[in-house]
Length: 403
Image 1: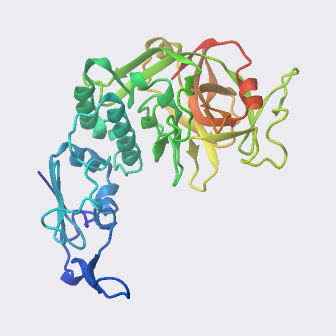
Image 2: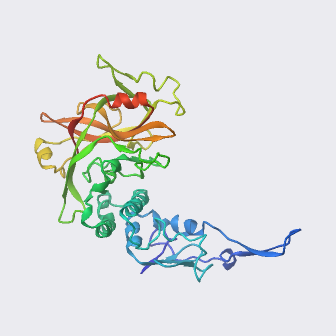
Image 3: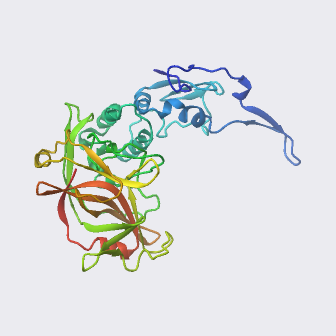
C-alpha cells in the first residue's frame, strides 16, 4: 500500500492541511416543485477525484505513475480529504463506503485494478499510461526509461510471449504506433545525451499523444503503408525495459523529399524544386478543404518555435552495431545544417473517414555518416484527400534505417 502525500509539492510541505468538513460532505437539497412530489438530492463535485488527486502536485512527478500503478492500494492525503483506491473500491471521507458508480474512475486508465484485458484492451491502457507519464516531470532526464520499466515489465507479463517491448513501443503495434505526436504544450525537446531511438516517444522530453487509432475511422479501412522489417535495441544492462545505449528499425516504405511552407508540405517537381502540391494547400489553405497537408515538428524552443535536433558525431561503427550511447545530439533551430541533407515524408498508415481518405506518417531527416545514409525522426505529418496522398505514394518502396 502506498501512502501518498498528494497535496505536497516536496518534502518541505505539510502532508495534510487543515480544512473545513462542510466543504467535503455532499450538500443536501430538498425540492418542492409544482406537480412533483417533494424530493431530496445531494449536490457534489463530480470532478473531486480529478481535482484533488489527479491534478495534485504529486501527480506531476514521473516516478509516481509507476509507483501508483504497481501498488494495489493507495491512500491519498489531499488538500481537502483522504482518498482510498484499490482494485475493488474507490472511497473518500465524503463517501466512506465507496463512491457512487457515476463518480468512480475504477476501470479507467487512471485506475489501478489489474484486470486481465484482452490484448487490444491492454494496448489501449498502455497508450493512456504513456500519455500520462510523458506529461510528468523528471528531475534526472536519464531516468525516462527506468522510471517506467516496472509498468513495462507488468504489461510484458500480461501480454506474454506473443509481444515484445521495444523502446517504449510494443512490436505488435508497429508500424502504427510510430504515429505518436508531441503536444508541445510546453517546451518539447530531445536531450543532448542519448536516451532512446528518435522514433520512440521516450526520446522526447515533453507530453505526447498516440494518433494511430482515429476515432472516426471507417471500419476495416485502416491500412499500413510501410512495414518494419527489423527492430533492434541495445539495453544499457540486462533489462530490456530499462535504460538504452542504442537501437534502430529497418523499414520498407516510400520516401518523398519534402520542404515546409509554414506548417504545410512542399514536394519536388520535375526539376527537383520544392513546391506546393498542385491541387492541395492553396495560398489561403484551410483545414476544411478537401485536400491539405499538415507538418508538425516534434520539438520546439522555449518561445514556441519549431526546431529539430540530430546526432552530431555518429560513426559507421555506430550504424553497424546500433550503439549510440556516446553520441551527442545537437539542436538546429533554422532547419539548415551541413549535417542534414534533406527532409523526407514516410507514409505510415491510411484510413477513410466520412468517405474521404486520410494519411499519417513521419518526417525524417537524412544524415550521411562516413558514406552511409541513415534517417532520424524529427516530426510527423497528416494529409487528407487523394491528391496529396497519391503524390506521397508515388515513389517506389525502399529499405531505410531509422535511428
